[in-house]
Image (tube, rainbow, N blue to C red):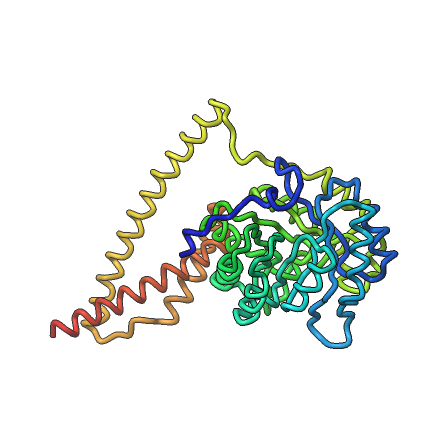
Length: 367
């Protein structure tokens, strides 16, 4: 079913120049009408296409600022009237949708805490039937591509014509550099499955700190993302929510001006010929890699037979520890990323165990 989804360009649902990335910006939260209006004025001339602000804020713990709710929606109407830009807000319930549309909100987005719950997404999808505004869907908190795809499918099946995906990173128990791990391979796989699905990066929520936002934004542009959603506040240090990850409009202007926008491809004949030459070399090396893997699995099969004949267990911790320690060390000496090789050999080891188990079962059946 997924392969049959046909997505319309966001530019046919939001008026903006689709020859450049879509830029969505605004404060994490709408704190007051004055704050929202002054921020919108500051952002108007910064090449921003859509304004954003949290009206309903799903917070991790109670007693945090959870947004002004319906009270803030008339502020959006005032901002739109003066600034003339479309406005996006997060919704989490059918009631949010009803109130947002009643007050002229142009774009809705479904947050990570909603995407993770299929029951919640289905309620939202049912409430969106017949609605013509674009809907953007953030990745779920946990790194599960199927949940993200499921949310997209539910909204698509409700008849929403303009859908986009927002990559905002994934939670991790391990304390890392970022607030949320980017895990770029997940949105890349999503884009591979749905090439026409607009993909927007939210570097603010990935970063957790404003100092990382430029680098993450540039990474998204290098990966050919369709846009960015960046939180911007007039006085970030005193913001009522997510203060550390918001940038001033002045800093946002610097970020946007410094970004290098890559072309999706090039028609230059020299480039195309060189690209094909390098790809052909990669194809040959890949074929050699597969031949080497086939040879390794053949040896693994012999190993499995030998263990079975001598009544030795398939999995041996000491051997695994040796492999897991030595292969990344070899990689480092050859200037190949150690973590990549470690993950690769985890997969190879799992396949080796499966192969030896298969051999053991086959020998048992023969006897």
